[in-house]
Image 1: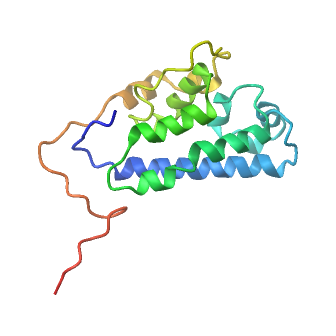
Image 2 (image 1 turned 60 degrees about the vertical axis):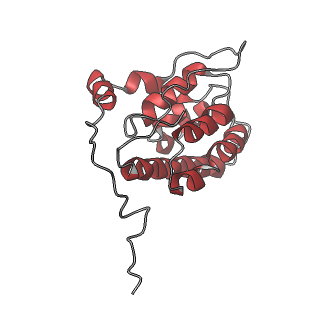
Length: 179
């Protein structure tokens, strides 16, 4: 579940908030195409502005814009609250995305995790289960995009310190004097 860490996770929280912004921007761009029944993958081939949203490549090839929009809302609505909580629930962040955006799509989930782990090494670790009997689609581009150097850099975690971590700065306010 959530193991206690001595790491300062505010930079991971920042990266996940930036990723949330990218998710919302991609959803907005897809909605502006005014083609709710079109497959996201199809629109990516037509509109070069969508290509910089690499995480879209992890989606099931049949996912429509309307389905993506609905699933994104369900997958990411808990993120702001979770990312601002004093105790970060890493499993809840990954679980909401896995169950709402990649349910039954193990290859898509693994590709998405590979993408997010480029900036947040712990994201999705230990969450590779998919409903029994679910069929996985073909391997996704995002998994191929990671170079061996990126994979090894993501897998290397900073050394842990025995010193207690004092949470200062964003997202925790500086202590105020009581005088």
